[in-house]
Length: 188
Length: 188
DNA sequence: ATTGCCATGTAAGGGGTTACATGATTAT
DNA sequence: ATAATCATGTAACCCCTTACATGGCAAT
Image 1 (cartoon, rainbow over the protein chains, first blue to last red):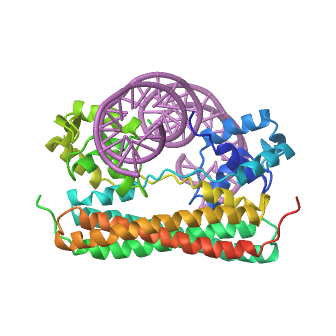
Image 2: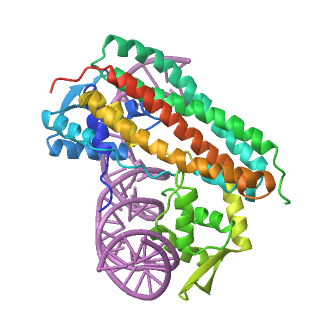
Image 3: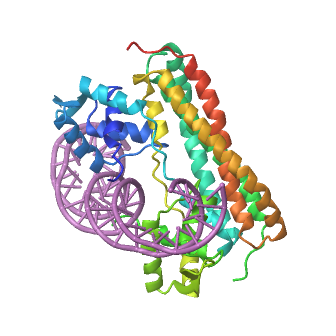
């Protein structure tokens, strides 16, 4: 039996924040949660249907801002209970698949110049992520102080993990670049 | 078209270090590379067959230490060329799926006590990993200094990334635990 | 005009996980 | 005896990604 999909739980979680459309859910994950979780429409929409069938969420047809109808989903009590049960379980260990690391690990085959390029790309990504996160942090800190029972302090903790992660990545990239720069090119 | 499997490249990479059996490859990945790459036997053995068919590796029947025969695979020139081409390509961005983070992010639904448990498990994992990595680092540093053209300096760079990662994780866990400890329990 | 955002999906198909299977040897 | 290591696989099946499809509205 393959591992259970966690898409439904990600959706249930989002809907404890506020009612959302499928589009909203994707957007929320992409904007706030990108660095640790992603879903695509082709997972979200079928999952929404199944959650409705299971009575864990309910869909309501509403008018969008531009007259077009859309389906707003909200979580039911049964959905909350199911989510809570899952949240209490230990997280499944994640199977790591860092392609960057794999390529660097075998970098002796292609030499330091290629590795420096990889590190340059990683560095740029880390800095980009940091710029985005730092803006959100201030906002979440305010909310977390004002409403300690809200989602804010939990979101803040995770966001800080992301910030730490990319700070670490930035430092490591710089250090690894220095180290690589001192290595000899292999004979072509 | 789904993403191409990277299992064959992971295997090719291993075989640039030395000839290995399928079992050796799994072992090498589990011992040295666990923190950033994993493969299972059900991926390795079929992939080995395909790589042989493609002329990228060659299998040789040899006597194991205990008389039982085993197949030792070695990479061919064509295999090296293919690997190098892949190593030069930019790494595919990885789709993050940190279940731990997802559970903490929605932690408001279950309260700080549950989150503290999650963080405790994460912390223990990080410390365990660090203990294992620190032992390897010293050994790799020696090798990297002695043989700058070997795999050692590249492996060391990646290993240090792993060490940094788990140090960061350790610090973040402690910080997050402090923060969580100050939060009110939700009404049950 | 054209780009971008809102909004919701379906189809195809490989990738990867879990479970199952086997069996000899060595160490405790 | 029993557990651990060596050694090699197969079967089933879900998960997830990629590609495709549609169309209105707003802004430049």
